[in-house]
Length: 410
Image (cartoon, rainbow, N blue to C red; front, side, top):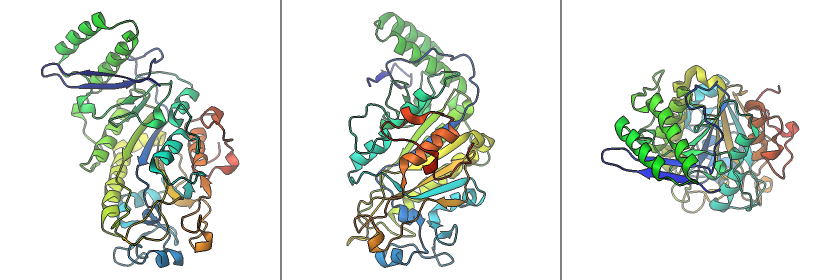
C-alpha cells in the first residue's frame, strides 16, 4: 500500500501529519456518524513475560524454573493478586483487578501463534497480518476487518493509530490514520488554515487532490472536537507516558463521535533478557504504566465501554525458566486480555498445558493451546459483527467451536 503524508510548518502553525491510503470512500465530515462497536487494539511490543503478568502461582514448576524472578503466591508480601486460586495478576496490575472482579476483563492464557519463530520482527508481522508463517500477505488483519464491515458513515477517522507510523495491522486499501499527537493535528490558526488550503488546492496535482481533500476533512473534524480542551471523565488519571497519552487521545476520539471503529496503541520495552525483576524491577515498571493506562481509559470512557472492547496482545511469550542473567529469553505461549462491552470476564480462558519440562513446547516454553486467530476471530464476529470473517483470516477457517468463549454466543 502506498501511504501519503502531508507535512506543513508555516510560521506559528502546528505540524500536520496525516497517513492516508490512496483513496477513501465518500466523506461525511459534516454529519456526526451513528455510534458503532469499537475495537481498541493494544500491542505490547517486545514479547511481554505472560507468566509474570498473569502468574500461574498454583503451578509448582513455575517456582522451580524461576528461583529469583517468580512472583510470590497471594497473601505474601508483594505476592500475586489472586484471580481464581491458580492464576494471579502481577501486583502492579492492581488497577485492573476490579475490572476482572466485576466481570469486565477476561484473560486467555497459553495463547499465541502456531509458528515457531522467536524473531520479534517475524512474529509481530505474522500477528499483525494474522497469517502466521506467511510473509507475502499485503494487508493487515485490522485493515481487512474494515473492508469486511458495512460502512454506514465513512469518515477519515474510521481507523486511527496513535503512533508515529501506521502499524502493519492497519496497512490496507480501507485506509487509516497514523497520528502521533492530536494536539499537533491540524492548523490551529483558522486564517492560516484557510490560506494554506487555498494554496494547496491550487498547487496539488490531480493524483493528490483527493488526498488533500481527505486531509482537510480530517482537520476540520478534529478542530470541531477541540482536543486541546479535553478533560478526562470520572477521575481518570492517565500515566504521564507516551502510552498513557495515546490512550487518553483514543478516549477523546471515541467521545468526539468522529466515526472511530478501530483504534491502535502500542507500548514497548518488554524484551527483558537481563534483570527482569519480580514484584519490582523492569517488568514491574512497564506493567505499572500498562495497567494504570488501561484502567484510566476504561474509567474515562465510562458508559461508552458498552460499545468498546480493548484487546491486548504481544508477539510471543518468554521461556519458562529464567536465564543466567535473571531475565527471560524468547518463548512461545503468552496471555491476552479482553476488556469491555459484552466480555464474559472474571475468568481465565484457554486450556492450561502445564509447565513441567515434558509439558513445555520444545522442552522450554509455555505451549500454545489457543491460536491467537481464534481470539481475534471471536472479537471480529461477536463484537464487531462481521458475519463472514473468511476475508479477514485468509488461509484459516474461523470456527466458533474454537473460540475461547470470551463473548456470549449470539
